[in-house]
Amino acid sequence: MSTSTITVNTQDDRSQDLVINPPSSGLALKGTITVPGDKSISHRALMLGAIAEGETIIEGLLIGEDPRSTAKCFRAMGAKIGQLNTEKVRVKGVGLGNLKEPLDVLNAGNSGTTMRLMLGILASHSGRFFTVTGDSSLRSRPMSRVVKPLVQMGAAIWGRKDNALAPLAVKGKELKPIHYLSPVASAQVKSCVLLAGLMVEGKTTVTEPALSRDHSERMLKAFGAELEINPTTNSVTITGKPTLKGQHIIVPGDISSAAFWLVAAAIVPGSELLITNVGVNPTRIGILEVLAMMEADITQENERMVAGEPVVDLRVKYSKLKACTIGGNLIPRLIDEIPILAVAAACAEGTTIIKDAAELRVKESDRLAVMASELTKMGAKVTERPDGLEITGGQPLKGAEVDSYTDHRIAMSFAIASLIAKDATTIHRAEAASISYPNFVATLEQVMT
Ligand code: S3P
Picture 1 (cartoon, rainbow, N blue to C red):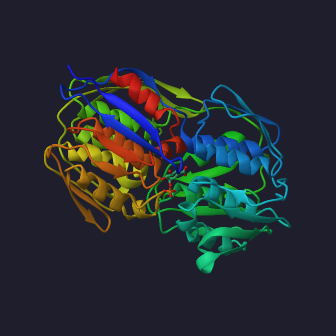
Picture 2 (cartoon, protein in one colour; picture 1 turned 90 degrees about the vertical axis):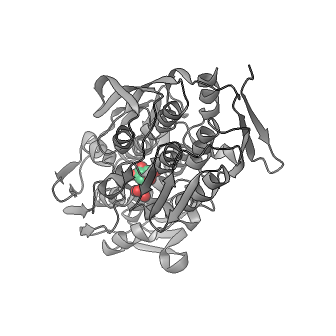
């Protein structure tokens, strides 16, 4: 029987090639695994901890590059954030409005959440000056979506391309409350406005076209802010100037990371995985709804509430997947899972249509273009549409050389696709996975043996 191999090769430029060669005799993924802490909740726990009074304790924090960027930025503004670890991170907050002017540029790295949420906090810190930048991917992503509402609130922000791109300069000011009608269903936009509204006298409201993840709302309430939520209109109103008090946060496993294993076990014949401690916030479970439509065999066990967020264990077994259509209000609830769902679609019977997903073009990479080009290299039948993808499943995948385009979710999606490909697949710049999933390759090795 041939054995599978996983090799990581470091290149001269220190990027890494991940080479996956599944056995020709077939491979079944087995075992019980945990996934790292939720990225969205980890950012928010660090940020709210940093601006609250007293101590916040965070258990289960994601130790990925993105939360590291958040921690670094807020340390530079006076918050005392202990060494990042998954057990217990202590954050000593400065109290609302008390962040210090940093002595240097704040660098959000690859993290859109860090930059967009932080801008809301900075813009309302009257009398202080901030400069914010990021890596080359983040410097090309649209910041106008948060600059626009902040400027409506009275913020002073300058940046490249008519204040749309980082590096950005922010002169903190007293802001005024607004009702912002966001043109996009984006939790980052919603959270930016709510965080700016924390420092504003009166009520600030955001209305979005479809409901995006609500971790900010849940956590702001837990820290003591006053929020009114109108689910019929997808509106949230925050009352400014609360006293935020440090909390004990337990971060559940990230369903966006679990998604790779859900699809992996669903497409690799003979597989069965148990993924424990996964957050199943209703605004995040679009992946489970779609995999159910595709007739995947997934069961939820041990349902419980942990620190205000619903948590389950997910058991997934191999099954023959069917194509489906993904669009509309479902998109914000699975926005980060579309790359791995494209892999599932390539293995499903029939043609899967992904639509209303133009937002994917402004993520860490243009995820529609990249999934189309790289899946095609592996032999999949994919058509790129302006707002989505059309994928006809059932073509056998073959090993190929693909690129992550430095996008963590692309790197991991192709690692999973390679498990059912004939011959070896090389994923260039696969180190990007460490943005949200530092132990990804170790877990892959675990479930393949
Ligand atoms: C996030 C919101 C989403 C998501 C991102 C994390 C958050 O972005 O894609 O990975 O933590 O608020 P958008 O708000 O741009 O949709």
